[in-house]
Length: 139
Image 1: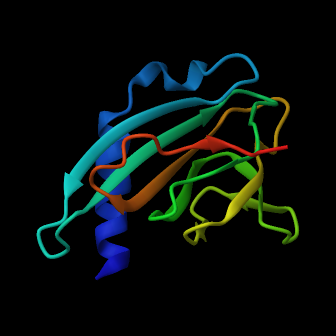
Image 2: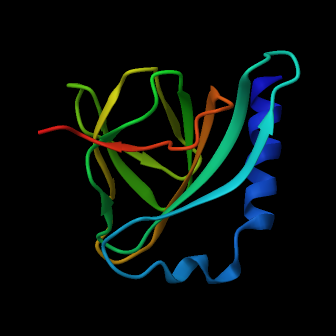
């Protein structure tokens, strides 16, 4: 059931994302909220889909997410280097996924290629009232 829901969400995101998304130039990630919907069976919770696009060599600064957020990320294109908490840095390729638990630190999030773009869809289950989804790591 969850796999079919995630498959449908990924397909919907690919239809929503603009064709120019492959032009995510520069080193900073382009982050776009592509959908949000309150969950009728979980009052106070919503599902939010965030498309993250990296140009060649692009990355995001280390960050955390709201304490209420569970995140399930699927790589849509290219390859993404990722490190959650003090775990190893791993490379995830198109079709692969990873999750982040409430309170996790995302220390590395970057395009694994210096020549090709990469995209991922991050699906958040989070408090409906939560608008800000990413916070820089405190030094």
